[in-house]
Structure formats: structure tokens, C-alpha cells
Figure 1 (cartoon, protein in one colour):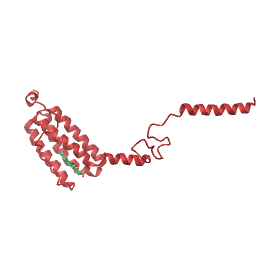
Figure 2: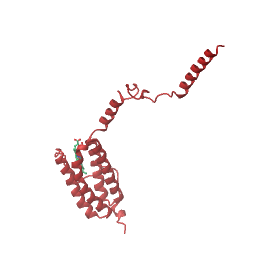
Figure 3: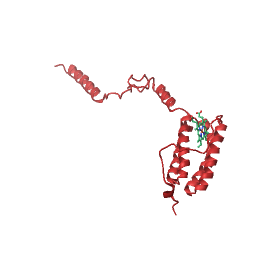
Figure 4: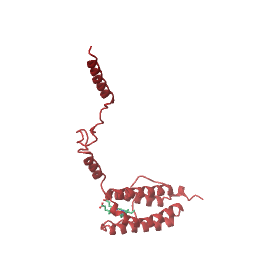
Length: 182
Ligand code: HEC
């Protein structure tokens, strides 16, 4: 056999084998070209990588979705205080801060007005740490006023929050059994 031909065949065979071994199948919806071209049709995310990122950003929405979550946590926080369920109250404050932080990542222009919430939140935190129901109640009223102050500053003064009147979630805790720790 001609050795040049034999070498040529070997080289082709090796290349084919290498391609077979290293060429893993692309994940569903993911094109294998660095994402420059359109996604395959088995995913709802369509277009180039940038177009797909835009679609995800649109789906995450702006500040309003953060506010829907903040409102839930605001209500839970209030009833946690009523129940003297201080761990739950502290948890809700932390989650509320996180929701606002993510909202501000999406709408950074709102950061300056959002800062007006911090003194009130610090007061609420102090009431929670001290397990002091009276201090909590007063701080919560300041918190509500601060929410509304930001709504005014952000031209949505028609969104006015008040002291929550009704429990909405399923969380219940007996205030009697949540007496302050000595
Ligand atoms: C940055 C200032 C700011 C702060 C602080 C703030 N809000 Fe808002 N809130 C907004 C804006 C702006 C909107 C309108 C959202 C939009 O247009 O995307 C809004 C909307 C809302 C909505 C309506 C949500 C909906 O779409 O159904 C509620 C409820 C709400 N806020 C509750 C609160 C509560 C409770 C607090 C305090 C714990 C609070 N907000 C603090 C700026 C703020």
C-alpha cells in the first residue's frame, strides 16, 4: 500500500473519530455557534443571545414586581409583629430588603428615592431586635409613611399603603407562646 495514501486515510479516520468523541449534542434550544444565530424552535426563547436576554429581562419586569413582593412582606411583617413572632419579622425585613435590592438593579434610577425607606426600616429592625411590641408598632407607622413618601416622590402618589387590616397568608403564630425571651 502506498504509505502516503495510508497516512492520509489514518489522518481522516483520526479526525472523524475525534469529531465523534468530542462533538457533544447541543442542549435543547441551544445553538452551538456561540449563540450568534437564532435559537432552535424547541424553546420559547427565540432570536440571538442578546434578543433572548432581552426577552428574559422583559419577563422579570421592572420595579412593580418588586413592589408586589414588598407589599406581601410588608403585610407579613406587620402580623409577625402582632404575633410577637420576632424571627419571622426579622426574616420578612431581610426578604423585603432583598426584593428592593433586585428591583433597584432593574430600575437603578429609583435608588435615590428608595433610600428614604432605610431610617424607617432601621427603626422597625430595632423594635424587632428588642422584641418590643410598642416600639415595633410605632416604627411600622413610620415605615408606612416612608413607603408613601417614596410613592409621592416617584409620581405614583395614588398608591397609598396603610396599616394592614387583614391577614392574607396562612402563617399563624400564637402571641402568648411568643413571649419575649428574658
Ligand atoms: C423607590 C421608592 C419606593 C419605595 C421605598 C416603595 N415603593 Fe412601592 N412603588 C414604587 C413605585 C415607583 C411603584 C410603581 C411601580 C411601577 O410603576 O413599576 C410602586 C408600587 C407599589 C405597589 C403597587 C404594586 C402593584 O403593581 O400592584 C404597592 C402595593 C407598593 N408599591 C407598596 C409599597 C410598600 C408597602 C412599600 C414600603 C414597605 C413601598 N411600596 C415602598 C416606589 C416605591
